Length: 340
Ligand SMILES: *[C@@H]1O[C@H](CO)[C@@H](O)[C@H](O)[C@H]1NC(C)=O
Image (cartoon, rainbow, N blue to C red; front, top):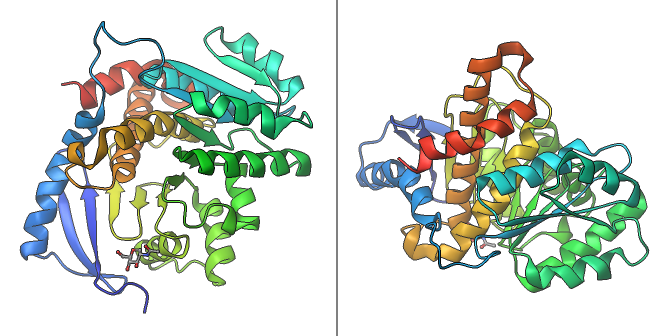
């Protein structure tokens, strides 16, 4: 027995919500029960809920109020991923994006963009203390883009996650950050402000680490719920053809139209966007999200946005589309989805 009272499965097709009542891993009916009425309302509102948490642009604010986001990752081999995550956070609307990476990655990442603040600290013996000193100024952290699997860097990352938990800030974990979590799930287990963004392979690894069983390919929803619950109901975004989002109670399905083209860096655009939206949704509180888990709302927003960017870039570039093309679409995609 996995989850007691079934779960809402909300299939979101931007304007055409379809809701199923799911029980014991099977969609048993297209329910027209009270539950459904309730859920449809939620579904119709979910884009609205994302809109609700977006802070208005006013002249009165000072720099930093709309979000200072930290990206932990970037090493000798990988410099693109932290760049894409950090620039996406800025394009979505964060005021400042900090990258905490290794010394040899820092100059490279800086050279991509003058807009990022780059700290060459991740391989320093003082890494944890250095990043900790910035944490009071950060609203959320994204852990993992371009992190790699070097033992020393993973050890430092572990320390950074622990310090971030003490500060109570939202933590988005992706890529090799998830590899670390699969080795030591207790690092994040029970921290309700964590959002994990695994792809299919990362999901399997986490699932097997936690549930000691392979993923049941006939029951993705059930597996997602089980994994979230096993980790203490933190939010998980399972990326795929459709993105499944769960907090251990509900499963949202984001199948907003993207394209058939996947390019490297798309996951980093998602994690960077999610860093900002998680902060906004968390700050806005349950009143603005109509009692919904703010991280579900944030995740739904980030997934839809990433897919919309993919869709727009694909229309322009087709097969030659890359993550850089997607980044350039963030502004118009955001307006189209959330500011109309
Ligand atoms: C997680 O959520 C499920 C479903 O709502 C609930 O039954 C369970 O008690 C929750 N677990 C924790 C640790 O909060």
